[in-house]
Amino acid sequence: MTAASLTAARVRSRALSRERVLDTLLLAVLFTTTFEKVHWRFGGQVGIADVLTILFLVAFLAAERRPLPRSSALVLGFFAAFLLVYLSGFFDIDTQQGLHQFVKGMVKLVFHFLFLATAVGYLARRGEHYFWQALGWFMAGFLANAVYGILQLLAARAGVNLDHVLLSPLTGGASSINIFGAVDGQSIYRPNALTGDPNHLGVMLDVPLLMLTPVYLRLERGHPLKRRLAWMLSFLLLVLLATLSRSGLLGLGVGVFVLMLPYRRHVRTRSFLQPLAGVALVLAVVVLTRLHYFTVVIRSRVHTGGGSTSLHFAVYDFIPKVLHLHPLLGLGLNNFSVYYESITGKTNWGPHSFWVAVVVESGLLGLLAWIVFLRYVFLRLKAARLLGRVLDRAGDPLGARVRPLAYGMTAALVGTIAANFFYLTMQFYYFYVFATFVLALPVVFARRR
Image 1: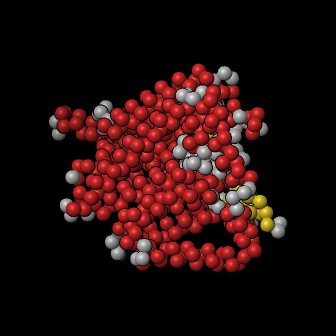
Image 2: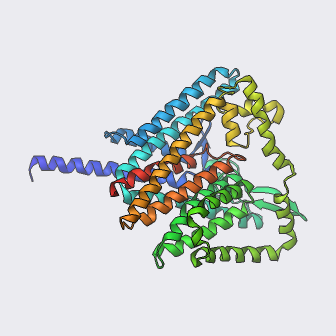
Image 3: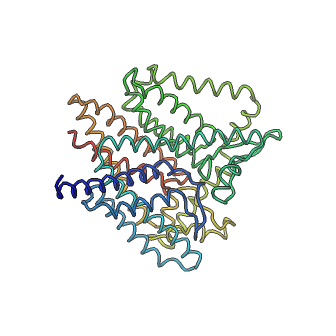
């Protein structure tokens, strides 16, 4: 072997090693992106997804020299626009606590958008096989969270705090399952799993449920994944119902309505009805064993006149007050709790609505920036659906995967936007990971056309 060939072999070996490191780090980020409780306090709250994201970004910047695709460049353009809006709003902050909250929000924003830009570029470069592998790890993270939620619920029923047993030794922090109230002395438990709140878990589960349902329906009979997806989707639906999250159910309902337009012919099929029948049977058995308990619980969640419901609507009263004072730039990023501590009585109280947070903290310019960004995401979804249609017509079997996935992503995005009118999860890592797959989908599979 000549010296030149030896040198080339070493270069290839180093390149493969760097690629394996990047592959592993990205898959780890995707799997842990919903694990909010796995965090440590280092000058703030640093989650496991934060640590892995930093490692991925460092490895990516050290290894990659090739230009990013156009989608990544546009993401960086949106990032610059958000930076301009938020940094301009910095001058409305006049307290030390407000400055601290602003810095925390800015750090999150920087890492979220840098990850979004680089991950889209990396998925586009690695191609179709790695895209499906990465999507599988993302979905596996939701499944692991849901499994932990059920174990957490069963342990709580037995009088055991599973978080204290498993998570506290790892993180050094305290956490537990959510207790909603009590019926005849029996606590009402709402699993929050590895997220910080049962509503977070409920809204997050909308993403895999809505994304994968069209893919499941289009899978051929006898495909090895069809039965697995049926079990997985049924299980995730049961966990979502166990959270008692009205925001999660709202997002799911809106997303299902979106899917009914292209997939209404599947409603009467065995593939659609059998999993739902299984979920209904499990619910019937559980409810009938403790009928009075569940009657009280369901009535309390259906009732819309309680303090929790009033709280979700009351936060919208802050919008006209802020627009009167700071119409264009708001109060400053991540500063809602600072300015309304005197009203809420809490030092870290969120607005319970992503859209209220956007308007209150970044004004009309921040709202406009988010609307334009989401419009771009919807346009990429439209491109993915059109690409899937082209592949279908060309007889490419991937059309039966790309097109349903694009429809599922569209429903998941609409459902998440709807749920975030009464909760706020669009500022979490999982949403940016979801956006990564949305933006990467038409880029990865465009070469098939």
